[in-house]
Length: 215
View 1 (cartoon, one colour):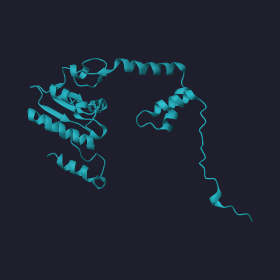
View 2 (cartoon, rainbow, N blue to C red; view 1 turned 45 degrees about the vertical axis):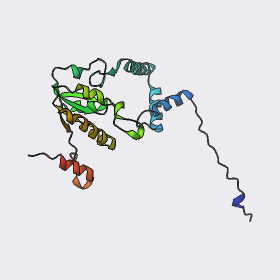
View 3 (cartoon, one colour; view 1 turned 90 degrees about the vertical axis):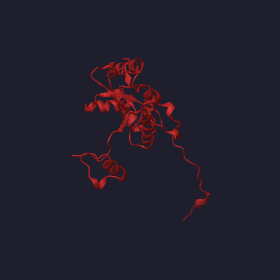
View 4 (tube, helix red, strand yellow; view 1 turned 60 degrees about the vertical axis):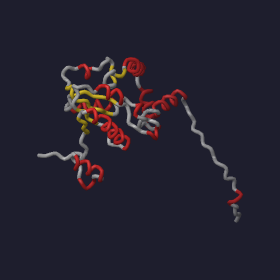
């Protein structure tokens, strides 16, 4: 029987290369993969789905992206995305101008509007304070928020996501606005409907107790 000395086996790395059958498909996949929450496999599925569509659909799809980029802008008052400046919410005579709800992103405005519960105005910060990533207060729409606080404004609602960065931003805004003499509140945080106390973490339970209401 012949034995092989494992120490003399060539252990050089074997480089495997992926064969790309279409450079055009690869470019589209790479573009889709740059989108948030889109991995490479999902990007591939999207690229192949687009490829199967009629040419007219693809043309409309591309033109809609270009039109969106060319027509959508920031509202000069609340800094939400809009095609008209100021936006329809800021111009509406039916909105309560004594309350301004502060959110991180334009998507938050869409979510709150779906509830049909809030009838005040909005202010979009476009991010949160995060020194580790080089995002400071002056990089957000904070000074613009302060300039909107006039004698008609009675309350500022801070509806910022309960992340570490969100908490830092909330505390910063509260300290900045309170001396002006305007009521500062934050949205309640607690136990979601349908969940059980057993599975709630300590921070969530703490917020739920703080935000308790009287029957």
